[in-house]
Amino acid sequence: MAYTKIHAITATVNKAVDYICNPDKTDEGILISSYGCSPETAAYDFKFALSKTSQSDSNKAYHLIQSFLPGEVSKRQAHQIGVELADKLLEGRHSYIVTTHIDRGHVHNHIIFCAADNVNHEKYHDCKKTYYNIRRLSDELCREHELSVITPGQKRGKTYKEWQAGKSGSAWKERLKADIDEAIKSAASYEDCMELIRAKGYEVKGEDFGEKAHKFISFRPLDRERFVRGSAKSLGAEYTKERIKERIEEKAFAKDKKRIAFPTRKKPIVKDYSKKNLIDASGDKFAQSPGLKHWADVQNLKIAAASYSQAGSLSELEKQIAAKSTLAKTARDSLVETEHQLKDLGQVLKYAEQYKANHIYHVRYQKSKDKDAYFRCHETELILHDGAENMLKRFGVNLMNIDVEKLRSDYNALYSKKQALQKTYKSAEKEAADLNRKLENLNQYLDRNPEPQAVYKKLDNNTQSL
Image (cartoon, rainbow, N blue to C red; front, side, top):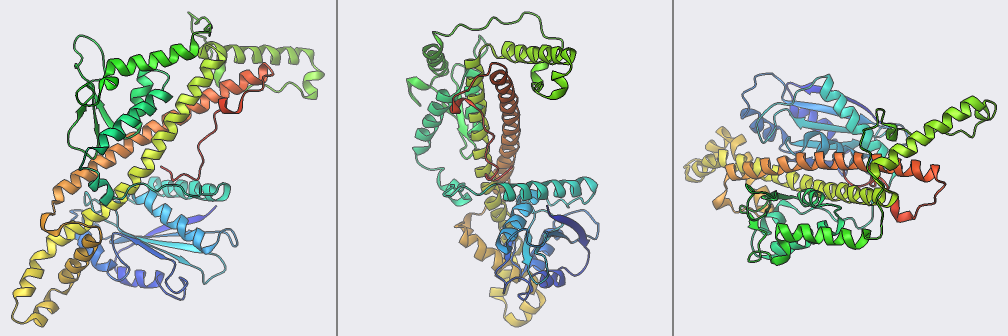
């Protein structure tokens, strides 16, 4: 595990940045990363972000230190953990610099981030709650890097530029249809199918049935402005809500026509034994005490019966586990992609604001008769303008048509999507784990060896977290 501490910077941001970026400490500058700024202009970038906030406290930045045990990690792995910690903690809102120092007996990270964020211009609130959040995130990352390896060839989410380019053309409809087909294939019910489609990053409306329900179901990726109807004319006859429900029912009937479902209990169990694990009655104390052994057998019978009654049958339980596992994995994959989009869009938004605010100084500089004198008076504004212009060109943004409000609206939409995906992922993962525990109890009680594909396995920790 790593040790963390944080303190506020109220005066000399440039000196703190110079210290953590010392080439003698950072392997000649190799172990330096930044977001929303550069080490050379960080003081100017932070000053610009701070000028946008109405909060009057003196904190200009925060300095977070993450120290590792000697020999625990390599310098590159430590730097990667530091960048991941900054991304998770700041969520693409604050500019930051991450450096890794290797000049002492232990490798440690320095993270300096602006006190004001680049989206809502609100200041970071440093308190016990936020510090405990830093500790939790740092510990989670350490566990992930100790216990797992990043899967080779794992696909990174789309960049903001790719996301914008995907708005044109009709290929997205084919992708939508493919995602609906995959959801139907994986879902155990119509409701599960709708939840899976939402987990894939789509907004869905009109999916209900009834007299007051909409005639058509509609889908919209969050990177498009309009919905598309699930009608024979728009997507095809196989993608109406009636047909989607029929396809799920046909699939379930084909698989389960020979299965006899366990009768549903009419009265709820007073105590939910299905949340418990079976008692291991093989120890000496059970062998020496018939009464204790009898008690354990009765408890195990209650646990197995409760698990079975709630599931309906073993095959139904295995199917539920598969459905929830698929939902959790789908939501997690979408979450990782959305986090990458947020990070890219956060940078575009920051530099767009910076460019717009300082463009007038650039215009006046070009028209000035004494350019040297004007530059001396407005050096900060001109540096910020040129830096923002270069970064926006690197992102492929058209400088003639920058719409800051549209960029902020896109960012907020992506952030809302991320929060919904986090909720779906955590809920599905918890439900899958609960169902898997019930199946393991039944397998153990019945001395049953399940097929490998029937057992739920928790998602790999090496996938980027939420």
